[in-house]
Image (cartoon, rainbow over all chains, first blue to last red; front, top):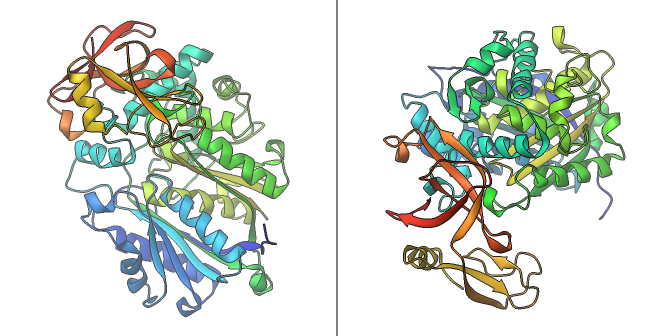
Length: 388
Length: 112
């Protein structure tokens, strides 16, 4: 590989994640993008390209071709503007490709973000239906599977193979709800107990309501620049590692349904590029669309041995004061999961933490953070490592 | 190359077709252009037993729109010989490891 240029994040912005009844994806994205532009103290005309993630706007908003749509509203008419769709990893992949474009010398200043409008007059059934576009239509959708159903199938297999328990799943949810209490941008500000989680109604057995992330609206954006411009900004947060992997879109096509190999591949690449190991990470934002997903994420990222993620959460190792704090923001579970915005939402959280601007959530002395974003039931994954 | 439609049509008449790699022997679920293990393109269409064991399952209470009148129902992944896995709706009491027969019903894969 040719020598890559350094890439840094110099501006961040996000909307609150939750219900925005009066706003569509465009208003949400304008809000987050203007915050990022203002945070970076640049002019919109400085931006050379827009990399934008959105997953299900084609169905829920009857809107595709969103790159130019978003660019126009931000005064960015005429620049290259692309929408990325890789299910729930849409903006993680947008960041990955924007990183490549800057690192390789093509651009110097790029706006990367994502938005999703999910709370509409359509109900849970329609949203569930739209999200299944990220699964295998012929073999999974036709077999009645939904996203909760896919992760429930993974969960039962993980429980059977490694002895992971419903209580351990509940502990992920309790922790993330607690963490979100300190996050003003989180969808939920409500603590729950293990009992609440265990008694909640079934969505797809063995997953219950509090094992599942909510349906959220929201947007997030970052400005990333090449090293050429680092000196012009106060605290550029460097992207020191970027990885991406893929696997069969269907669970039935995977070798082992208790692992998400695409994320393991992405992690290996990111760690290698950064020249660090899992033990060097101070905090991680991982893709906990379902509680079992957080457990598998912490195994695949090397924080726990394969099969021991459940034990890890039970022993408090992923708590804010634990060995490896996971989802200090509240995660997808409690911060919310506007799918196309989630990958960049994780990056916004890490940058706040690494700048020391995370308020009550601040992890003292945090220097290196990791973001893990998964699309579908694991067909796409990105991992990014940031350093202050 | 067998298409998805050809695979389903054969399954309707009780034949579970797979693509066996002539080079490494791996069984591949159609449609595939290459062996998923060794990437060889010499694939031979063979019939395997339409029986397998439930690998994992879930009972779905919140369905997609297409299945809204059917919930709750159980979907599962079943493993057949040679490691072939297939997803379908379970029409018997679900249990991990249980032996089931792979059939079709109104164009969908079901397990009995």
